[in-house]
Length: 465
Ligand code: BG6
Image 1 (cartoon, rainbow, N blue to C red):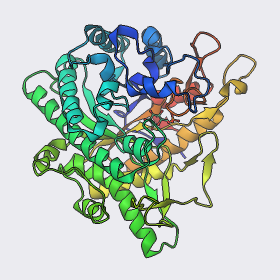
Image 2 (cartoon, rainbow, N blue to C red; image 1 turned 120 degrees about the horizontal axis):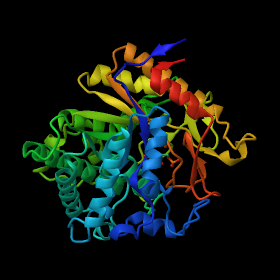
Image 3 (cartoon, helix red, strand yellow; image 1 turned 60 degrees about the vertical axis):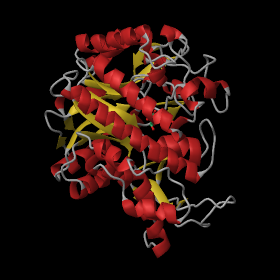
Image 4 (tube, protein in one colour; image 1 turned 120 degrees about the vertical axis):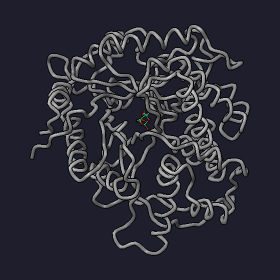
């Protein structure tokens, strides 16, 4: 079966400042929490640069953009590092400013459209020490940072995003306890989620102000990128499974979709959280702030679906509520390297939910990708990584996207993560995602993987075959 994607469909790749730039001491950058965390050396694999490391993008940006252009990519999303742009007093760091001007100008010269995200899990450390996202002071500091970014780069960038995966930040830091500061407290996670929602809305407010004041391109747009893994429960669900589904969907998906389309949070979800003792730091004046959270479009990161069931216990040992337990679908196809289920139809299901419940909302796939361990062992005699599984993964996801578009989805593009191998939060360089290899044994040199040839054909014809 052959599918035709729209002619004006974006085809590109995603990456982030912290995962590609590394080297925190460069250009007057101040430490972010990743500099602190990765020194703890917990699960890092192949992390050969002491502190956390990028993939040498900073010194190779022209080569990287040209390589991406050569395989048909028209756009790249990356992020500004807050800790690189502003100093500890919130003033512009001139070297950081110069670096991002250089990045945007290089991409433009090569013919790559840059999408800019303002926050990719990378809070400056001094702000974390003042309470992080649990503090209103930090919410205000984010609005200030966003304003400076818009006013400084507004004429260079068309597509802006306030946050990447605002649901993952509270989950990984405060529910699962997988990232610094390794807390497991559902209530604190939701407070963080609430404050990030305020920060997002203030960021959009700053963007609209900057645009009205003439700092931005006329046709610029603002959006939010989130991880919208659709939740599913068992085939013959109990009432309790369905309630677990309502709350998982409510907190992970509907919370953000309502915020970015209606400028409000779902009241039924807030009511249930509060009735179970979850302490949200709501103030009466917040409604007016959240009302400014409506965006022009949305980015959907999709790797795997969420499979959940009713929780075995309603609370943990500290009396903190639990709304759902994980459920392993017996038919799940797994990416064993990453431990994530592969379920391309999840993108279609998300697309249909948006079409039916938020019909005006335009969106694009802002991340989708397959991370695989030890790809260095999969090279042919010419040293080219033979990653046919990546072709299969992307092709199947693109097919479901094409079907969704045929069925009325307003999906405007596809960005693959991470288009060039880069450093990862949980495991440094263990799982490789790229269509382009970064050879750690050979000075970070770039080499196209086998899949890149296939990608180029799709990106240039927009035909998924
Ligand atoms: C996304 C993030 O959640 O998943 C990326 O936006 C991340 O920053 C990517 O790298 C893949 O996850 P991981 O943990 O395998 O790097």
